[in-house]
Image 1 (cartoon, one colour):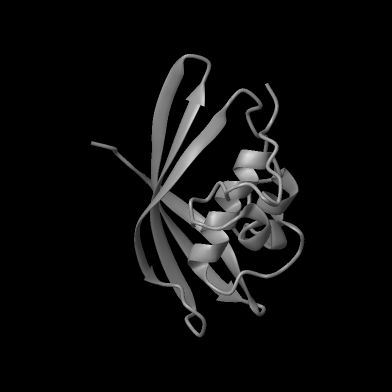
Image 2 (cartoon, rainbow, N blue to C red):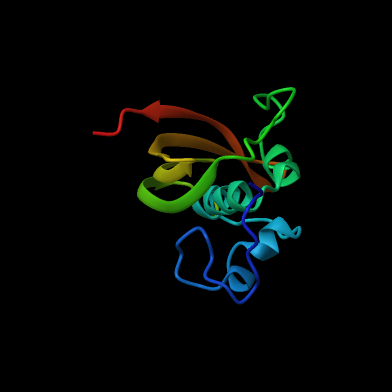
Length: 135
């Protein structure tokens, strides 16, 4: 199974209510997100389309793993933003809590994470995340 193909006119995988071309695609193409939530949503879209280079490039160099390998069998199916704290233009730090739904073969699940972001060098970076139990 390969990553999903998403065209510019398709609904954006991040669930923001716009087309992919008007939402996350420009970020995956090189535009810089201006908020922590935009970065988190675009990173989710990168997981959906299998863009591991974008995931590496938006992960803070101080916390980025040496290797990032995406599971080609895992399909990301929906994103819910649960909460945001700070992370707007002008902020130095931000937190975005989300639930990312997935399936792999016959199994289905939810990744519930509270992610931390930092604004440095005129851009937002993903720092790390705390996995939460999903009740």
